[in-house]
Length: 491
Image 1 (cartoon, rainbow, N blue to C red):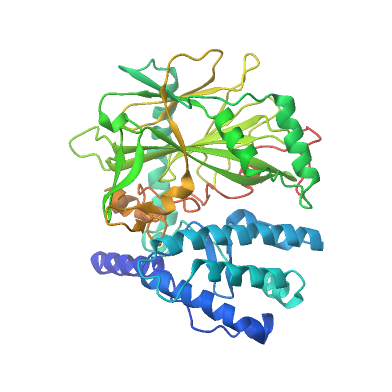
Image 2: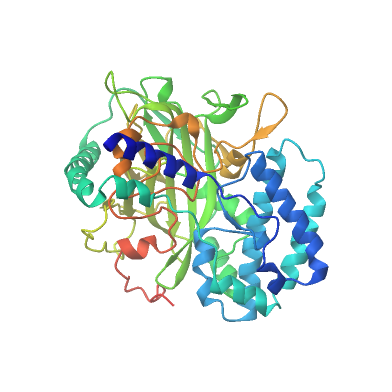
């Protein structure tokens, strides 16, 4: 009986992972849009259908057939209940419209057959629809009454068939043992040779200048978001970029640039060390905080034994630096790009961790305080597994190999050897070339394809309970409310 049940589970999970077919028409649209807008709606819907048909649908943002000109992440969706003024709605609408334009750009570039579609015409249609949404009560009513849902990184079917209430208790001792092993790395000296990597030129910024940027940005925002300019964000990313130290025993320990060796065959070019960056926003007790994200990609996670279910092609580590309302380092946390090994570091004594919740797997939590005024973090990794083994503030920096800073956005549309473009990830936000054997015995805990490297928005970080790395209130669950008056209670 167990074998048929397992096959049924695999079938159901596979079906649930395939994006739902896009309908030719949607009855809800008749209540939202005017007759003059139907041509644009049809064009954008046809484009999305072609994108899905060719398997190039981008999974980093969620898309809703009722609103083919918009795209959403968990942060933007969290604001829907609280948009009260026209100015707030206008700013929010500009945010989701901009994200949709980025998604449409990568999907258009990845689409092998563009017949019938012009990028400029698609953009004009999207702009036209968005401009009329602001003053359309029916649009806001439909959006708030039935908001889009971001896909979960968890499968209920896996937990049902895996008897999750029992399997989580069986898995918990092993997880606690693994956490103790990871913490032990922090008291061990480097193993073998260590290679240091850094951005070659750090911008000349001061904390007072950064503070003025943040104050001005919030004053210009109806939602009090720190919406800095692209130039400012690029300078901030370079200024706060950590110095990385990697224990190196093989080519698996050399960070590189992601590329396609041939269609459907991604690889890591270790001759070109690269640091992939992106900026995100999070909510923390009434404040919206900027997050600077840094990703290193390795060709493999090296096997520790003859059979290592956690080893395999590709390994990525994501370091996320959250800045306080004045733009100072506040919280640093890290995951592998499978969503595993979540570690959280408080960078100021003003932050106090909340007591662990026994109903959910808790990340490793530590405090790292600056001994003197410095804005450079040193982050060290082990060889082979690329586990985070040290975080410290650096007083001085020595020679380091240069890292080329590249936008994470490029991973959504990479050139291939046949003059086409292809995302690193599939329509489920997964990197199929990185699947791990661990998925065969960790499936009862509900995480989809454990160990597989995945795209932003799809990082489930807890095997027990549920938590997503991009949950906009993630730090409110991990930290107590600070006494600092700048960080108020949740609005």
